[in-house]
Amino acid sequence: MADSYEDILSELSRSKHWGHLEEVRKIALRRRVYAWILGFFLLVLSLGMMLFGSGDVVFSGFGGLFVSVFITRYCLRIVRKTYSAEYKKLFIPPLVTSVITQAANSDTQASRGNGSQRNQPANRCSFYHDRHINISLLQRIPLFAKYVGDDLIFHGEDLFSGKINKTDFQFSDFLIKREYKSKLVDQTFEFTIFRGLVFIADFHKAFEGTTTLMSRKGKKYKRQRMIGSRMNTVSHEFDRLFRTTTTDEITARYLLPANIIERIIHLRKLFPKNGVSICLHNGIVVIAIQDVDYFEADGLNKPESKAVRHTYEQIQTLVSIIELLNLNIRIWNKRNEKDFYATTSSHD
Image 1 (cartoon, rainbow, N blue to C red):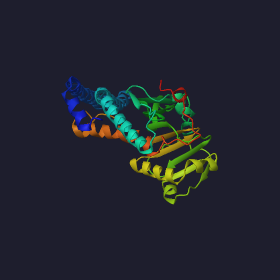
Image 2 (image 1 turned 180 degrees about the vertical axis):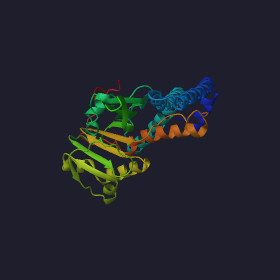
Image 3 (image 1 turned 90 degrees about the vertical axis):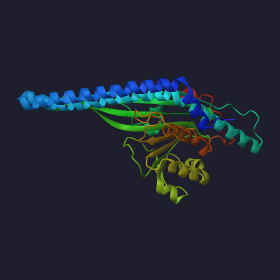
């Protein structure tokens, strides 16, 4: 029987790791104070240069204002990230175990209902806070085909990789930036061109070609690429929510029958404020949830029940996509993808 969320939280709160996290939090709080003091010192220094300097020194003063803000923000970000990394190491593994165990119990009950419990595969999921989906794989997905070039910087973390029943899956956060070198001021600037979570899983039907779905509302990044020609589906509600393109309309209608359309509509409602892009490509489904940064600690606050539950629900929502899209109900001609990890390596 799977432990309830309350049981897991109670066990965590009694563990030695909880005390360790509190020590890390106290150190982070002190470092935050030091960061503000450093920023204030640089600000006063730059203002002094502006008031009492002249010529190039005045320009240096304005530069000091920029540098003081930049350094302060950078230091605060490092402090938060360091604390959040420890938070993830403590909380996410047991939360993942609970979610996967519940999914296994759900599969077992479903298999008992249809008499197919025999040879039920074991569910599993691993979490790596400092890894992400392979970049070369990401760039082979048509949705991200434009995210190439020497001027791009990829940052990724929080890789979940596993299998539920017949379906291999993985998902991780990504932050992709583009470098721009300004000749005017001889400086390099960075612009965010994608921020969000990428989810990849084996689809339950065998197919070739590409069909893309792009939500009409929510923040969307311009480099997200739609493939093929525009088409309308059998659902007016679906067409109001998504723009659909495909390289083969016959295949697209095979992949998007009425029941799957209803399931994708429900999926859209899970992320109402975010842009959602879906790519069905050569036997896999890829979902990009844009403008999110999941699984982080709640600032430098104590890990209270509400904050931990929020992380738990995020994991639960993402793992439930497999059941929501019915990915374990395989069509007769769909083989198990034994080479899934060969094509979706999780190594950096």
